[in-house]
Image (cartoon, rainbow, N blue to C red; front, top):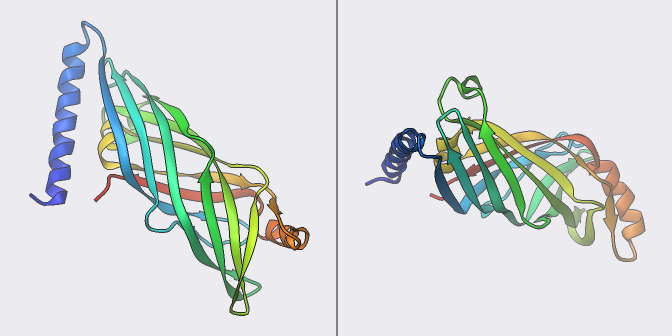
Length: 227
């Protein structure tokens, strides 16, 4: 069986099971459906407004966590997401600074684990599909700048955002999509000022702050089952 066929079969089974069990369980109480997210693939980008360029996340980024849906009917679903952790390996992204392509070393370190909620919303939010929920998982992370390329020379830096960056991840989708096929969170965030350690930090920090910091920085983060 191909992976694509296997995923489709799993989705059909999940849809059928949830629909049947939620209806059957309604008179006696809710049906609870639990899901472990194990090494789901994370992809996407962050676009600092001042640069106007996408910083694409590297391969190897993952999401792990737990989900639970309390189904009293396909229009009466509540639940939670807990122990949510996004891991992004250190990476390098080329950005254009003053017209010059500059490799910048970056890190993304989530602050603690995140938790959130899911609750039923209008089916019109999901194109008329039943089981439509809003999932909301606020998460925060420190963004580090570990090196800057200059004239072909990689200069190590010890810089990070002065405060954690807030990602208020929220999307409307069916509970079946959430648990089986994944989703994409889009939004904007404020990147705080940058602070740097070391003797050169007092000179480097203002430059990096002027390039990266400020409001309305767009992000798009996709979560999907492992291949």
